[in-house]
Image 1: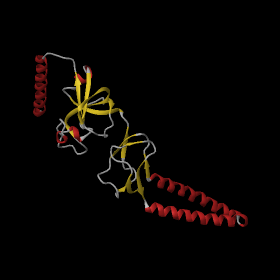
Image 2: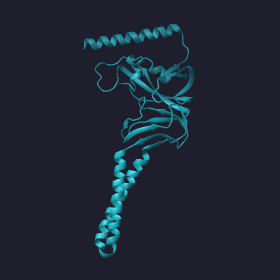
Image 3: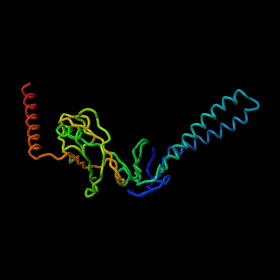
Image 4: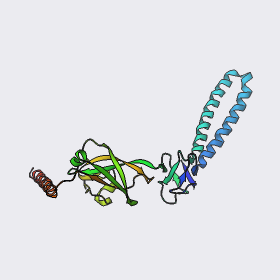
Length: 251
């Protein structure tokens, strides 16, 4: 825990491993370290005085010394951790709010990412009408990242959630967030789609370093087929869906 004093790296800056990114301060921790240091010095003085004349008392004092040393070591480790260093080389992306300097940062808060250009994964939601084509007839994948919409990246399918679900991995996939899935108004925990969706994981190839959680647009390429057949299939799906709704209503 501590107050963020100073950002040492700019958003989007290329950093190296070990480079200082942020410096925080915890005055209560500093006071605690001074107190523990004073207690340790006092115990050491008592131990030196008792070690010859009162060996039993010296043993008890020695146990206290070991305990306060362990506490002091932990406190100093926490103090060292207030200086945040980059764990690797890459592009620094801050996740904290704008102008975070001076803010109190609780332990465990996600501060940011150090991203390396390479292969990133994205989770894609597919409606029930399209899932069969995705599973059985995906000939290729193309991805456009929201902030670089003019650039097309290749990708490959690397995983799938085995069953349908209504929970969306991000509100950005809902119509309210600019996506295509209507939300279920009765959903209380997280964004819930009105109809079930299928989730797939794709791996972007040679992707530049971007923010984690950024929106991507995915194109699944299938085998070519006659327009008439596609229209027939779409009409058939629509008819089956309407019949399903009617059956539910009759029940």
